Structures are given as C-alpha cells and as structure tokens.
Image 1 (cartoon, rainbow, N blue to C red):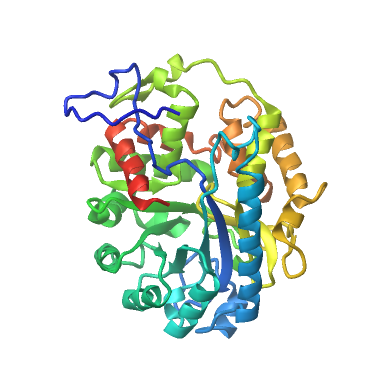
Image 2: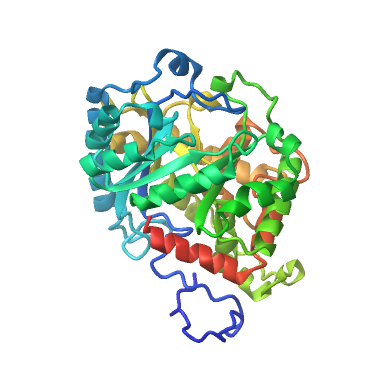
Amino acid sequence: MNFIPKQGNAGHHPLDNGGPVFDRRDSTLGVMDDLQVAIHTYDGCSRGCPGCVVDKHFKNRARGEPIMPHADLAIAQARVSEYYDWVRANLNTRDDPDAYFSKDGFQVNHYSYTMRFGNHSELPTDDLIMIADTLAAEYKVWSTAPTEEVPKFADVRKAVPGRYFLEIIYDPVADDAAFIRDMILEMRSHDILGYPEVLVTQRLLNALSPEQFVDEYLAPLGDLDVQVQFGRYSPSKTRSYSTTQVVPVDQEVDFLTAVAKRVVDQKLKLHPIPIAEYAVTLLDEYEELTAWEDGKGVNLDALPDEQPFNAKRIMEKTRDIFLTSLYVDHNLDLFVWSESMGQHVLDWNFGFKALGNIRDRSIQDIVTERGGVVDQMLIEVMRNLMTHPKCGPCRYKSFCASHAVPLFRKWHDDDGKHCYGYLPVIREFQRDYRFLQNMIDGFRDLEF
C-alpha cells in the first residue's frame, strides 16, 4: 500500500507521482486491526421490514428482554478476553510473511462487540447497561431501528463509558431520510457514532429507481461524512427460506452501479461500506494505480500483469481474517462472521455448522483445532477459488477469499454474468480520487 505524507499544497494533483496517491496513514480503511465479535443479544423488533433477519421465535416470545442471560454473557466475555490475549501473544508476534497479522504486518490492537440482531432501542436502559457492563470491550456497536431513543444509549454510555456506535437498519421504502439525518446528528451530540445499513431487496428496487434512491434517501445524508452499508438479501432459516425479496445478482449489480455513479457525480460525502473500501484496496494493493486516471477510473486495457497466485499466502491471510471475525449466538455456539455483501454470520441460519461451543472450550482451542471446522472452511474456500468458472481465471480471487465469497456462494449462488465481487460498482467509485480520499479520512477520524 502507498503511505505518503499528505500534501499541503492545494494545487497537488493525485497523478503527480504517476498514480493516485492515497494518504492512508492511521486510517483503518481496508485494514483489520480489531478482533470483531458479533453476539446474539436481542431479537425483538416492532417493525416488519421485508428481509428481516431477526428470529421469529425470539421476536414473538422475547420482546423487550435480552435473549442471553447475564451468566452466559459473562462466559462470552471471559472467553473473548482470554482469546484477545492469545491473539496478541501469538498472532501479533509471528515472523511469518504469509500471515496477515505478524510482527512486521498488521496488528490486532483492540476487540469490539456488535450486538445483534434486533432493535436494541426496545430494551430497557437497565438491560442495556447490564449488557454493556458485562461485555467489557471499549468499542460497542448496537443494532437498532430508526428510533427516538438515542438518549437511552447516551445514558448507557454514561453508566458504562466507551466508544459507542449505532447500526441503523434503514428501509427507504418505510423510513424518512430526514429522520435518519436527525438521528445521526443527535447521536453525534452525545458522542455516539454510527451508520445506516440498507438491505437491497426486491421491494426497494420495485419502489425506487437508482436515481430516486440516491436523490431522496442518500443525498439528505450527503454532507454528514457518514458511512452507509449496503447488504444483500439472502434466503435463510429465520426468513423461512423465502426468495420473494431476493434480487438476482446481475440486477443488484446494475442497480448499485447506477447508485455509485450518482453518488460520485453528486460528490456526496458518504462512505459506502464495504464496497467502496474495495475500490481503494484494488488500486493500492493490486497495483491498479498504474492504469488509473482521475475522473475516468481504471483503464482495463492497461492493467498490470496479474499477481502470482500464492495459495499458501492466501490461505494463511484468510485464516487470520476468519480468526478475528467471530460470532457468538444465544447458545454460545461460535461461528465465523463475514463482511462481504453486507454483514452475514455464517451460522446454522445460512446452513453452516458451528466451529464449537465456548461454554466448555476456549476460543483458541476451537479455532486452532487441526482438521476442525476452520480448516474445513479454508479447504472449501481454496477449492472453490481454483475450480469455480468465475473465480478460477479472475485476478482478484485472493481478495474474495478473505471475504468468504466462496462459502457464501455455496449457500446462494451468484448465477448470471456478474459475481459477488461487484466489480462494476467498484469501478464507479474508483473514478474520483477525492471521494475515495475523503472516505479514507473518515475511517481515520473514526479510529475504528
């Protein structure tokens, strides 16, 4: 990656050094420095959004109360804290050029919890405080619907200090952009950050053109320097395996490509995650800067030679990402958490088996088990990368490995012309250097 001092000269052009020069110093964009742990703390929600991922059993029978008792949350915290120490002692200190985390590579500097999947603003303040106090990470992300209960989270933060973020499930067909904007501003007034997440469903595409979606539901947020996450709908057990809201990959790619073009053309100060992060990664780490021109993007006819396919390196880097992206469900079963097309936990809900259960076993024992589920997943990833007709000849297959695309494809195939790499969308975001640098700066400001 290219880390150089930021230029103070207003006349500096990004092509002065022969390609886009991103100042990525201290920015966490495209960098894993966090042990990310999602945890199944609540599944209630009074809303009924199409594509809802909350478990109907808990939604109907556990409204207004945590679904994990304090004793189980305490077990999770003890296991995660112990595992964090193990990661820092064993992964951060390695002398291994093929690893993602190593003495001379990236470092795990903290751990975080993401409280999933329901509308946590429905929980009483005392329950939120109990969860926050028990899960003793500095960084905490809470899933929530659009809500007027921001002061409730501010009270929790006062009782249990730390860095708080709200992940707002934003349904443009039902929600008002002005309300989302006001909510984000109120959050910031309480030193709480966060972002809206939009699930791409058939209802959304049937109701709005890409231009309407941007103009009416993203542009009102376009001066806030806020992240916006796009998530793919996929059939699942909690959705009764319904395919009604599934958007075919080609249709989704066409929609998001038009969205990306309009966002860039209108110079909106949005940070589309994770897809626009990939735009920087491909330019920096896949050396596409040599074929790039500001305002036009990447000249596909001038791309450099494809990087050698180093199977061992890809497997070890993917292993490291899996080992630091975990999900603990309400039974204390452990799974991998993927941030490819939105955030998907690779659990029984999507047809994946547990890595193990942390009630009686340490996380490090589970994830390092020879021939265990992690090893099986990695073998499946590598096999798919090399044999799938879309991945085999692709120059970016090493990138998709760490985002679990080959595993997710096993559950719901990306049939059609395009794939889960969303390259046409990435190409639109790559057209504008300043848009990407602004996003990099936003990640630096977040420090997370």
